[in-house]
Image 1 (tube, rainbow, N blue to C red):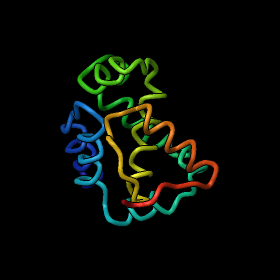
Image 2 (image 1 turned 90 degrees about the vertical axis):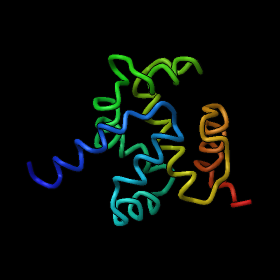
Image 3 (image 1 turned 90 degrees about the horizontal axis):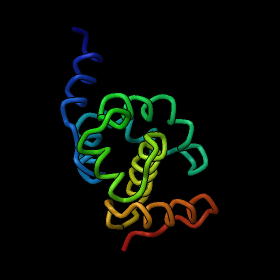
Image 4 (image 1 turned 30 degrees about the horizontal axis):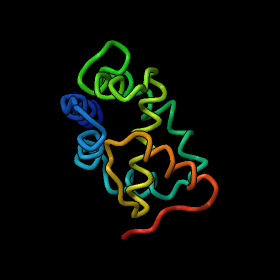
Length: 125
């Protein structure tokens, strides 16, 4: 198994139960370069990760077929796996910009990211 496949397998094994755990898993398994590149994206460009890491998240963390992370989102009325992965990546981006929030509050994440899209990224408190 090559290094990339081993890393993907290790990250898939995380099986997070909520957004906070998913972000911790990304922290553990993403390289510093990947974290820096992701943080450098403009808010409007985060959606470009939907096909790459977003698809990986949907396919490997049970968002299509059900699992702990899927169940977490559906309890918060987030029904579609695409929306689930977008919320997770938006939260990760916000946190990388110093935002403080309850990272398991999908409504707060949506509001904060909507403001970021209009140029009003929250500040660290």
